Length: 124
Image 1 (tube, one colour):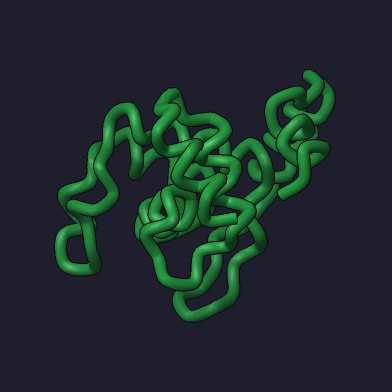
Image 2: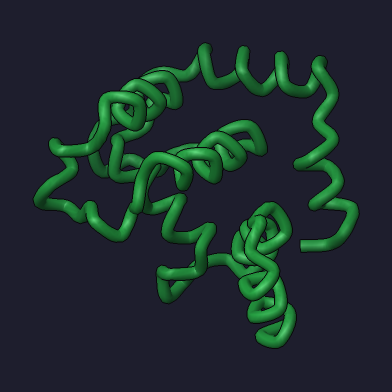
């Protein structure tokens, strides 16, 4: 993820935010097994924000029903299964084997933990 991309995420204009929220709101719920649309910047940032109230490492396929109501509501708004939200969070923190490096860099940039930022910088 380039500096310009990170700046895009943190400097979204009100118009860009509105456009992305409208796009989410117009989605239809996908059928199980279908490919989902890519997460947009608002979805990614909201998933990052969930780290304040949720440890995604505690939820797998068998206990998704125990997710907080806030996560389920967000998943419903995104028109995604709740597991997509926790998987996105695991991609962001780099826990998943096939996480996009750019997501980990964004997580490190947004993270208040300097040690995490240093660790990701060393990996790059």
